[in-house]
Image (tube, rainbow, N blue to C red; front, side, top):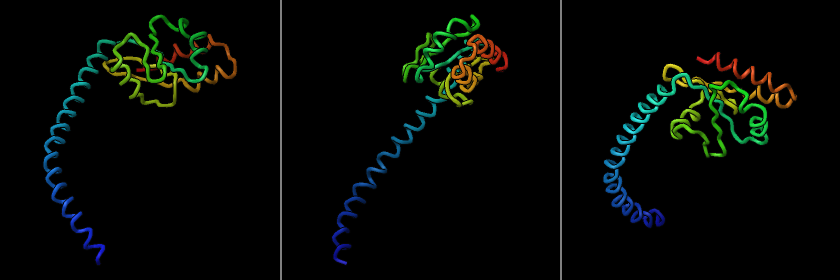
Length: 161
């Protein structure tokens, strides 16, 4: 009983300070949420317009995973169809000539999350993607002909909508 009586001033103090602080910050939180909502809405609209500006573009996206990027740079880069752009992700640093925030958003929203490399095709203002991770490592680990892999990648682009 004595321990409970000792805690009462602490509880009263927290209520006296806590409730006004809570009431004070509610409007700020609401304003922040409203601002965040409109920021996201504006970003999505700009992203959609950006994708429309990239209509028909094809991207081959790869990263620095172990020694795969050396294989890609030696055997794939420069050998794919000429209309395919390359996006290289070095850690969190995106190497691309395109607008970083939109390409990052595109990579973060990949639907076929099976691992790099990814192929992405822009069509009708939408990014269609496909992971070619299993095919890539199958060719690489079994020392199959890289030319066959390049043919496969080019065909995969044709299947994307």
